[in-house]
Picture 1: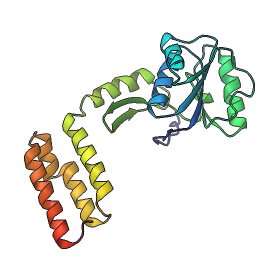
Picture 2 (picture 1 turned 45 degrees about the vertical axis):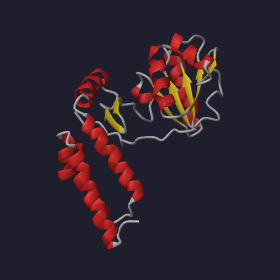
Picture 3 (picture 1 turned 60 degrees about the vertical axis):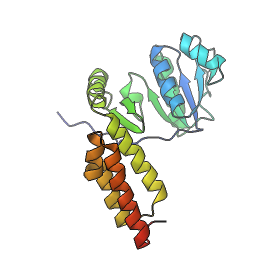
Length: 217
């Protein structure tokens, strides 16, 4: 049996992007919540919608058009999601999106997808995503739960600290060494043990040395 082609894993930045979601059931709700968390501008087209989707529409967090999908509805969007119980609708949405060069994902129809949606867990700025290429969603969900449970509070601290340092220190080998120390070195080890004060002492010493040497801003 030939090996399946591998997906190219990316994390999309959807802030302010126009996303179309066709469908109003439980699966569609999950997709809606995910793209809203990413800051997307969401339009939902479905004759009926879950209570959560209706509430979000009433709050102005998404636009709901309570009607069936119509030809041309994909126009004006950056990304298209379909999650309906009607395979014919999914095929129509996918065909029209692809004809316009739009990327589309159709739930439970891998052959109609230009991209797959991994099972995602979040802890602060850390995202754990598990994909099986659309072949075993239940297994992806199981693995995601197991892996996300291993992300501890100190990992979140280290991620946020690294982000702050990247934003305030100049690029170069010195910054890379400090970031590695936060991630896997002595500073990170102290944070992992809950020794935050000791970690800050080490970090301040590093930053002071940078300031003295003229490397830091």
